[in-house]
Length: 262
Image (cartoon, rainbow, N blue to C red):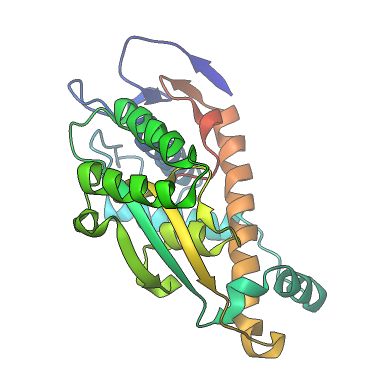
């Protein structure tokens, strides 16, 4: 992947990704770069008119969006998961396929708002995470968390010590639910939870595992999950290939854990 450091606007093969006066978070910039890589690939494949131009506001044309869908359908080879792979996945992730699983949780939300210094916000959230985890006495820890939520949380739940009550996966934003229901930890989670609302310091106070669904009942859901995982892997590899053939300025695509494309 050919990157160069420049004081100019970030770009992909000369196509600028943002306005001169716009400053983007690294994640947003990577998303725009990945989308632009795919838009240009769709043009090279003859799926998109050469007259279609990239956007500096991150909003591509409807034609470009349709062309990218066709490009990915043609280029990504997604294998159909077999019976054995599905059964292994189900056995290793029984909690995910339980019905009625609940967690009793509370949080301290550091909301991300336009114009906010995200790095400074993350540092504040990380300091808070360390503070609420450094209590040996459970009663003292509970009191400190509730007090911090009331003082610092940008969620209305702060008035109740950050209490969110009993939650099922469907009650939460998907990215928040993944952190709450993707493991069996009880206590303050060891890392910040990132969601569309901001950064969360989260404590799981109790868990109710619910009723595990037999494999035959959730076979289609398991297969869908494995297909989605295979799609993400294939898309990441394809984007890496495109990036390796492109001239990219001002964007570090190596920092993306997943393909930042919507």
